[in-house]
Length: 397
Image 1 (cartoon, rainbow, N blue to C red):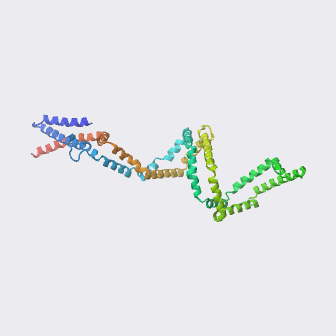
Image 2: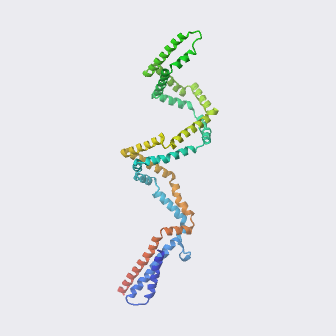
Image 3: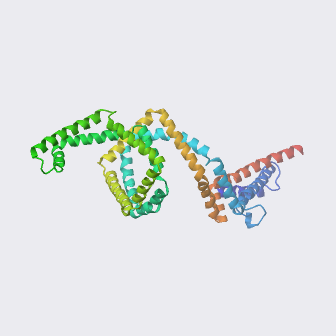
């Protein structure tokens, strides 16, 4: 395009030279060619001055990009940050992307949920394995245990226990415990008898011991069934009172609070505490890795089912889609506020890293055709303007 624009300038110069001092209609051609040269030269100077000194001459206010490169970089950064990378623009764009709807449709497509789980699960397993036992030990001993030691445990434990008792959340645990006791009594009458026989007097006859143990086994079963069937059983009420008193004492009684804090300190400072946490972590990691990496295992199958269920809900529940879209947009906007300047800085940093001549060449190459069209248009418009001016001059003369 530069060659085309320059060729038009050369053509105008040739036409001007060939029609110089020739009368008649050639005067119009000569005037048009002269004006075309002026227009071409003027626009060549204007376009060239943006990127370099025309003909290498240090004319003032030329080579603008090499001289103003850093200022242009900062202006582009501010412009991009102020008009494009704004929380409002990003939030609006995320809303228009229909991520929830498109994601649900993608997950419902046969095979996509399976592929997603098959690729993501091993990555999660490797991520879990990336945390070494030494790092876990350092976190436990260097951060977790000191933090727990500095916090007062008893008021928090008392408040939590009190909430559990008030909401009757412990009842299910009591039911489970009674069920297990009842099941053990029904399944292990021999062991129950042996436990009592071992504590019977040596002078007691065996037949008497058998009668007593059978009776006690029967009464124990009856008692467990009564506790299980009666929500208001005195044993349950006594346990409720015990837990309520303990919750209150953990918050108000200095002696109970001191004992709780001493117990916490003994547990935290015990030599095996950190090692136990590390071993538990290692066991959980091994179990999770085996489960995540087993393509035929229940974990991957459950993940696939959950993804499909989520997709179905997103397709049928407009309120859920709107909520998810709104939260994604809000999150993207918040990330923009936090990291927007860092993202926009990439523009200015790259431009500032260029040499002035390199920056001019890169920008000129990027918009080169349009710049050369300016020169071409200047040549054509200049020629037409010269033709009109010459015609007006002839008419006025």
